[in-house]
Length: 153
Image 1 (cartoon, helix red, strand yellow):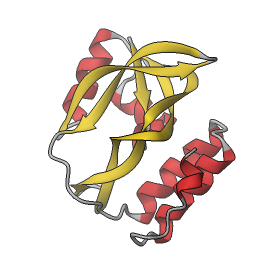
Image 2 (image 1 turned 60 degrees about the vertical axis):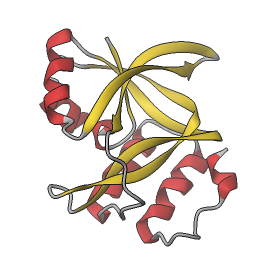
Image 3 (image 1 turned 30 degrees about the vertical axis):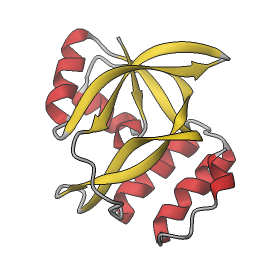
């Protein structure tokens, strides 16, 4: 079962802790969505990642192969999120994956530095597009008008 990670589950250590039998597969792109931080996490002391509809935007993530048991465990960890199937792009092909989205979206909530740094570190490790990494870096000192829309393309 393929799962698309785009937030803290990009971190290999975290996904291995949560889903011990997970196998890293490939980076992939989700078109028509953008990364946002729409849910507060007491654990992370800030906003946590979500995908929101945004035609013309894209989002990079990493696909893991999970067992049925691991996917069930992940359901338990992803409190406040719902799971659905969606298509991501890998080597110009649509690949069906599971993704988690926030249930009760709030307006933008600043992620903690520790949280966004974890995502940036993983994005660099998986060699996400350099413009996407620059986009992620804008969240370190984000104010509502600092994102350059061209970084989302």
